[in-house]
Length: 96
Image (cartoon, rainbow, N blue to C red; front, top):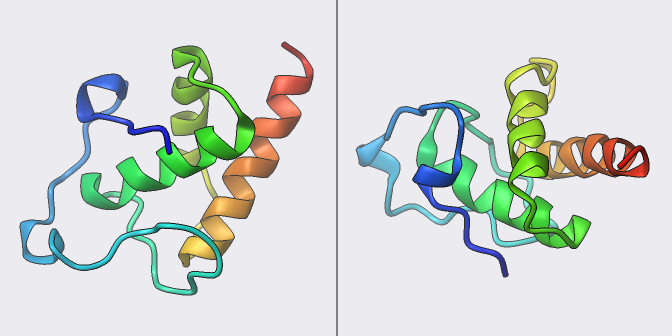
């Protein structure tokens, strides 16, 4: 699995230390809530999406962050977030 680090990201995210040690996204299915503002949630999610897309391109990662930050608010759990980002990323990569 691709490991995304905080310095790879173009945006800054809060670190919710109180939930840092709770299990994070590691694959489907995962109906747990997703906090799009928490660095500890964002890193494993973006790594999994990049893996699914089969890329380690920094430009793709930056675009995925854009999608994450404009993702509709009704998408609230990890499953939905993963599918949304993979869908957006797949469509974007078709044009590459």
